[in-house]
Length: 498
Image 1: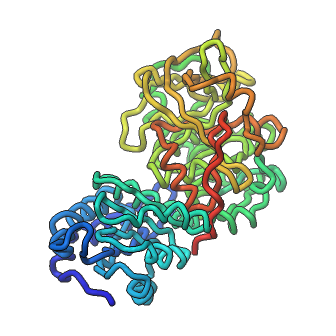
Image 2 (image 1 turned 30 degrees about the vertical axis):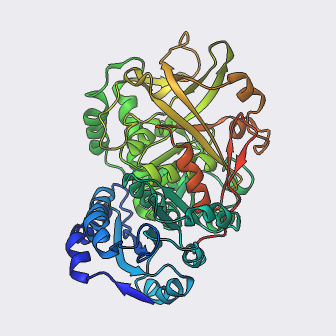
Image 3 (image 1 turned 180 degrees about the vertical axis):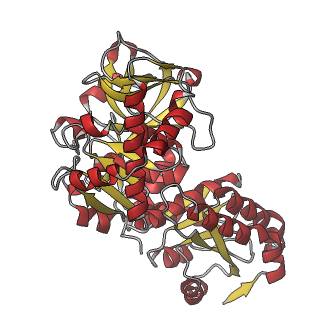
């Protein structure tokens, strides 16, 4: 049996939620890719009306009105692409949870957030997660002992995560992660290249499996079709992008001519036009050997600008890395730096290097990192970037990659140096200290990656330590997690979320 918080109290305290939902819809309509999407609708359930725990005189409606509803209003306002609805207070029983399901269905909720208030047996957690909706539980200390059952339910394959903490900011983290499966199901990825050009693990090259397993639709565009789009781009628009976003902002232009930079910006605008046409949030291109880059211009600058703006641009038709970047963008609002890692065991470090890097590694609202415009180092042609992360020495970073739509490889390290190793290899280089570089070398790939070099090599680097949140994201996405360089494997595959 469900009892309800006074509706005026709930809506009054969370009035910003509806406004945030509207703001998210407006922001989506103005998305630089033109890919409008509705906000993720999260149904809030307050679970438990009182009892021995937390205390006999516990006043659940008061706790909601004074502690939780105001914080949830801030959560929705901060995330922008989330709409919180519901707000029902129910007794902690499976029957009460089941009785609420028609209302959750009627609200067309994408996900469920349970605020655990009072003692029970965790049966409602199973009821909610068994709907297939991504489900998160926030449980503060002394709400009860229900938290103990969550790992058991996760082993059953349910898309369920928990934040057990007195810190209300844990709610923000949970809600942010709930968005990931929903956004992934709504996503499209444009792949530019001939049929069969996709790189990555075997499952990732099967676009029907990608759609069924992780959600995104992959749209193939041939090089000839891309050339036609490129020809339609206004030269003046390319010159404007070159001047305003790159040339005027660069620390130095080393090798490329102004004409080469403009040519790359025309390619950038052509990629953006394709994304608008297909309503996509991500694009990956079979660049070297796949499109006529000598004629069209290299896509490196375009990828970087997309990443700066909260979209995904991935090189070398790497589907695994593209999927990884999408998930991290939705979960953490951060761009990824696809890298070719190199082991430097003498320094207990990994060097991450590539010629494509975002200049806003901290997200679209962050200040741009200093950069120079260089040629692509593999062939000394085109226009690419050398991005300098010197100011971020000491920062923790995470690098990761999805493998075979089944496992997320993840590692963390600390930036200790920004090097230019005798101008060798790729333009952007950053050195990260790790726990044990020799062990990482020995266990590289964790036995889940194939032998072809690029798939075995590529990783995507992100600012921040996201290892624990990746575990939670994996439960929601039905992925295993492999901490690369270690024996431990966590997170059994979850059932596909509906």
